[in-house]
Image (cartoon, rainbow over all chains, first blue to last red; front, side, top):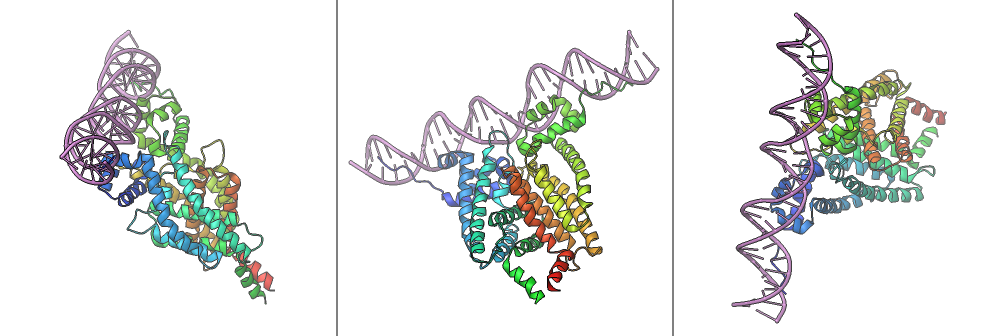
Length: 209
Length: 209
DNA sequence: CCACATCTGTAGTGAACACTACATATCTGG
DNA sequence: CCAGATATGTAGTGTTCACTACAGATGTGG
């Protein structure tokens, strides 16, 4: 019982190429021909390794969120809720306009609406976005416990808000907005988090005294 | 020279049906078969009336923005920049979760990323979104001139911000977020506009005096 | 009632799609 | 060096896609 012929391509490298194709054209817009060419393999290798087109997408999403997870950890490591939001949104302004990648975010570009037969693709993306939102929510819960966020503020709502702004910025980036435009959005967006922070309350109190 | 056989379907009614299909499945996900069935016509009638699939999309977008334009006029008629933002975002929370329509916004669901051959569809949608953004920007310019917004605030950036939040909410709605979740996002988002308003400055000053 | 123009339904068209059969090549275990 | 197992490249498969040829139907102007 031998172990068979070894595969001649690197799965992760190939996934990086597939990721870019899905990122640029979306799930339905990406064709197997484009994917195999970008990956440098033939269809049978793709299907043997990833099952089918949707399996390839999921593998690409896994890789994307894994790479992004490192950065997200840095984001939530910021000292305050306001700084978390700022680091997140300004970082997204950079990432989503990085010429090394397609514009926007794979978790949005991948496919917001799909045809019959791919209905679960949008939910697959939504589930990954929800992971980031949960991470933000947990961080904001901590911020509230630490007295960084006001006692009246809702960490889950704040996380949803930051997540929504990030998604909106992704769509803007993919349709041509430049880095400065995204940074302006981020700057304004952070002010809403700032309004929820105790530091802001103190600043207003400072004006008083 | 006769005037020919009159068309047996109402173009606007048919467009409303097509709009819903594009809204639910996106441009690439919608098939001519689905569209013709929803519109109650056969392919030759569709092509005679709208040219091709992309022509039908553009007509549907025109109708969508025309219907939405009435509402946008009400939005910018709000008395202050803060109220404009609130009316816009809370209204979007309602509209994007209205069970009478597919969830989300056609200008987002229509197609954020498309395959080769439909590359201009995303830009077609972006152009319509830009119209709303321009309308908001003009309103915020007026708000600044009226002393409603701070002298340091940037109306264009504020408009971009509100537009970005609206888009993000659309994506959330389409992936299952309910009305309350969207309202929470709107509530937080409005606070950033509030932070730019002179009324807020006065409120802080009021704490002082 | 006829010439002409436009619409409608049937029934397709070629092209592109996701996916695979099959023969061949390259590995391991014995 | 052979048998079993897995990967690869070529060359397709059937299906679905956007789109249309064509014949018949229904209108207007003379």
